[in-house]
Image 1 (tube, rainbow, N blue to C red):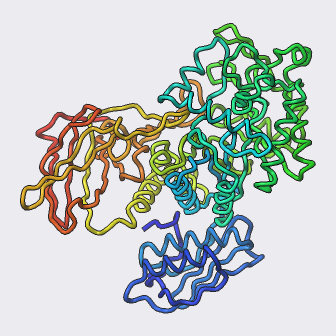
Image 2: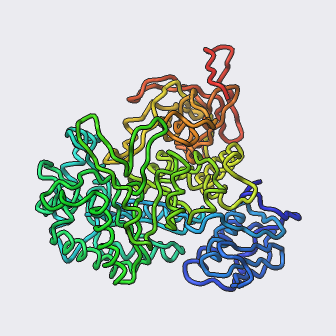
Length: 629
């Protein structure tokens, strides 16, 4: 059983130790977490075992050592952060109720292993879901949380920012897709609109402190993200006089020639620094399109405008003891593989808009910048610009399943940050493939035997581990169904105000009956607990026509965690479980009723309850559906 990627040294197994076992080197949340795990997964055969978490300077950085035996379990690392990740692995192993005896050293290929998230809506449901996602991230050894703040955090120095944010977000979030409609109705490029942050609401600083403490208790560095220059609609709702473009009713770009712009953002930065005490702040600067339009700015070159703004902000942060990070595409003279200009290159758009090149700013910006490199999937040579200019960089908007040359490229970088641009709740993380990407990145990062070409092994391990995680604590009385659907909806990313409403994806219900004939309905929801029979788990290893990265079928992986997707004879199937709606009774399968919004047949391959199985799919009696392995 692959509980961690290729745990070696299995010399037999022994029961999870007794909850009364002495535990050394843990306290607080960590001690409670291990004690609860031992209580939950111990067996009648469990016995006392000394469990020791110890610091050892001989252990390499970004690694920990596991020594497992019936008498002594020892987790060693050179710092408390990696002891925490060793604890996560011990918990993972305990979930099988028997531990493998032996020794293993887990060594990470990435120093930074992160996720980028929005703030939750400040109500208990979403605050708790946000924390739950942090706990899942910890399981997969995430050590960095980048949190976009924007207008969704309370600013006591400028409450008008929050007032404007609430009004703006209510307007933009009126219905799904409105943000994109507004963004694309002009003859000039606009930034994506992030009013999904906080679900358009505002967290108080006290609520933010609660989330900060939660992350830091779990050994996660927090990188606040404060968009400046671009993506500044949250500033400009109440300060339109600071906008670069006067013909935009929803301005998103600030004018760096206006001194009041710096007075405003420095006040906000100072509040953020006092609240977070961060090592580094991400100041954004991506998707900078409205350049050099005002009478003062038009007298300077685009690279100089861009570099001067970064320099001034970085100087302010440096004086407060904080480093500066930016999204880095505007420093690249970049093009898609078909030659279309993007990023920091000189661009003439079909609308007639000219976006001047900013890439020469790479020679003008401060040398202590850290870069978030999100163009890694377009051309693997782009990061050489950062390497040649001695800029440390982290892969942003990261999707490990499509990255070529993972090991080589990770060795040249600081690591990766996987980005979620929607709600930080379970279903959004699942359907945006964030859960799959965290598991996949974990397997690649911590197994020395895996690299990009090992997709089948890595993907198979990831989907099985996620399925185990999802259903680990379910009651024993569950219904297992293996099914698929002819409904073939395209994969959706739930971003920019497009929230998940599962009623929109309901295909219908499985009808099950008890021994008296009473019916119970089990919902079947496309993308959540069922997928298209035509989707597949294979990866296309050739680049597509514009991007230097692999291609996968996101429809297949978006169900991962809630289901265990597989392909048999060219047909995709999705195993899922339902809690028994009538606990204690034995249920049988009756039929599927297509009473939802989505139209399509649902095929049931297997129905299992209380050891009884019904095989309901007969390819000989149905139309052949073949899509290839």
